[in-house]
Length: 129
Image 1: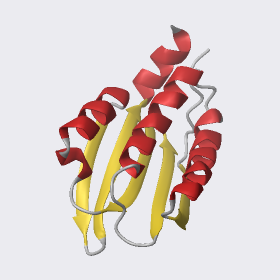
Image 2 (image 1 turned 90 degrees about the vertical axis):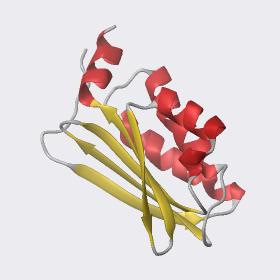
Image 3 (image 1 turned 135 degrees about the vertical axis):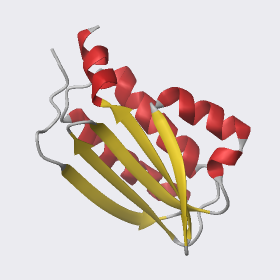
Image 4 (image 1 turned 120 degrees about the horizontal axis):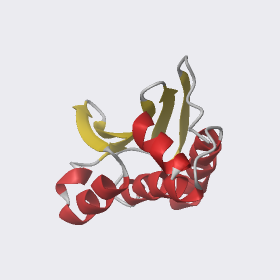
């Protein structure tokens, strides 16, 4: 079985309160999106753990924006805004970079956002092996 990545781009943007009680909402929506691709549970859990590790850092503002995009090259997730640079924390960076293929930050007026990427090649190898 191979990962069923779409030929077109599927994207969802979810904003939810930054309080701890709402983090499960982000996990549920992101888990639902990645489950469409018949990924093994461990790959889904890796991505969710990376997002949860980031959300444990300081959120800048009252809401969290979680954007997930499924494209032919893989899964892209953008989350934030954060106070400061979450990937500058060696503990967070070590966890996140081991769970996804690429992690990068971008800074805007409301704080820092983190972009995560799991490549289609890695998704396909995870479902085949």
